[in-house]
Image (cartoon, rainbow, N blue to C red; front, side, top):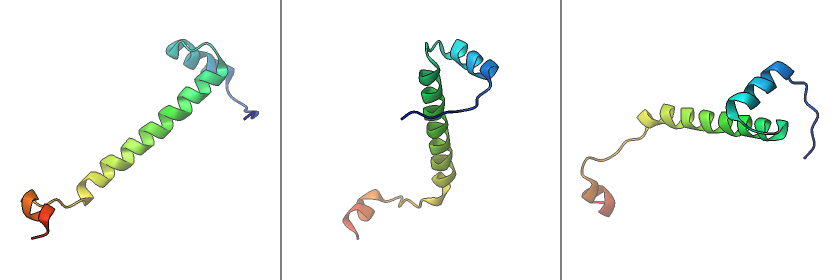
Amino acid sequence: MKTTLNVSEVLLKQAMDLTMLATKTETVQFALEAIVRQKTLEKIILAAGSLKFSEDWNNARHGR
């Protein structure tokens, strides 16, 4: 999908240099995937304390 973006050329060039990606499209795609991955991990980490696990997995597994 083609989209027009107003992006800092300096920031984009820095990102391309750091990632060693050849095109602006690859760099933007990489950055968006990294943001989604990071935010997903943050949600998982925040939810980690909210799950309750039975210490007796055998009884929990068989519903006893």
